[in-house]
Length: 105
Image 1 (cartoon, rainbow, N blue to C red):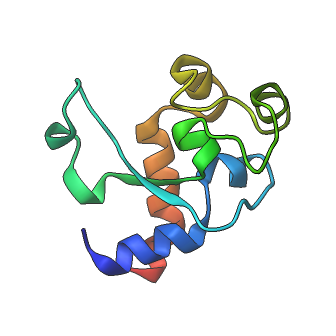
Image 2 (cartoon, rainbow, N blue to C red):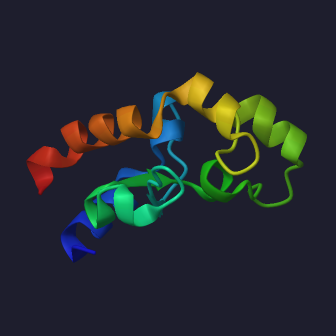
């Protein structure tokens, strides 16, 4: 992965949290998967910044999953359909992220 893109994504913060008006700190990099294969998705350029909750469904600190879901919305890992309904498709999120960070690349 392009080191500059990776660093910018990490610094950007979780796109789902940003949409909800939060900043959850440094993000993890999520590779979009199309038709069950990462190689069909666009590789390292098809990446989104997501926090541990929105990416892997891991609550922060000692918060219960129910609190995380209520406060921050669904997790992509735990509720992929609900995540898409609330935040948009991964492709739409990618377009939003690329538009935001494009000036920094």
